[in-house]
Image (cartoon, rainbow, N blue to C red; front, side):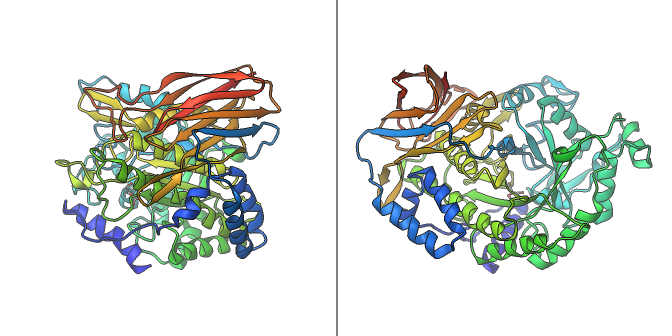
Length: 578
Ligand code: AHR
């Protein structure tokens, strides 16, 4: 635990000085190839696993092993898949498509905010091109202002006509002008049509500071703070959908023990109130506690402590979510290149990203013990690929390229979240613009959409759709000693009842024919889009922005069976017309 916790503060400290960390600590422990390559055999397997959890871990292990051993591995280039629309599961909460915008590098400044006097077209200082692109993603919520930044953020510096200029010690030690503050964030959300997920400062702030910020944002009555908000051009109270109570309080948020954090959580949960009377019921602000950052004993202990306390919580405090952070990094400090890599690094990163499945299962199982009704959501509010900084960039700005590999990685993680829809009801990819696995990259007036952007766009029909189990044999893609499922698939019925399928072919070399039998539906036709590119490390650049973009594909439907071909290393999303 000490080592795993240590790396973050060390890493942070080194970024402050603009140097890479020298620690070589793996954040997520390796899961055995054998299990991994089969945990995608059948999403039904995941359902069975959850049912068996009630009977105890031993039974689960035996059952999984037994099923995996008896399931045939498909070697042929044809994959049979079956979907029975009558077997619908949980709602895939649209909040799993959330985003994260931290004051870090060019994530906010330049990426979103250019200021009203900029020559870059903007609306009240916010870039028009970025807003238009993000609007198309139908982003449910944006987490802000951090990240590690949140635990050093003092909201008063970012409101009113005179902004206090500070530093950003976490990320490069650069000047923080505070020109993008509460009002600018809320304006940005209004422009893109999204909701606020505000992370309050538990590390270096006080309950009073956080409580006053919430009063400033949400009070409808004419309190002094509400009047100040009105004087700053916003008489109506803002809506805050989600409240993050601290960030990584086990690391950059204050290096707290679970018990110490729990005592802070209770205080902040009690006194930091949403005063906006408009949102009622499920629309009311949801408080999210800091949760685990990995799968080792220190992390399961963290989840245990918070959830055990939750089980016996009194009226005076409450949470609706437990956060979890997990990056695909393989080893610390992040050393994988984000561009100019080959099949080995491609398969290593995908293997690592699939560990998200085990991580979620592990923490969900603990949560199930204390919260069998699943009232508390698991919110994976930082996830994505974290690679070595691009050569020549400021190491504290976390700048990396975004390739076809990242698109596939995004699809695999979204599928995992959807398969756990009953518990995972929120997720925020890190981060939105210019930082880590971004949707968008900008350079002054230029903007380019990344492969990950297109996956989020293609998956929009899955927002609030109903999960439908897909039965298939994933087969195996092998590279060296790495074995991965060859195919992953997700099915869901959208809010209008239309069936959608998302199928990812992880194999970078072989196409695969899909034959899907569709039960309880009269399928007439199917249309969709596929995202692929010449190479696993293909990227979109400012000069060549269309290398990795989705292209229309057609599927044939005959006798209730749907047939289509998946290109190697591709993500395909199709809808079935009835
Ligand atoms: O996303 C970058 C950083 O990663 C965040 O600030 C922190 O919460 C996490 O460790």
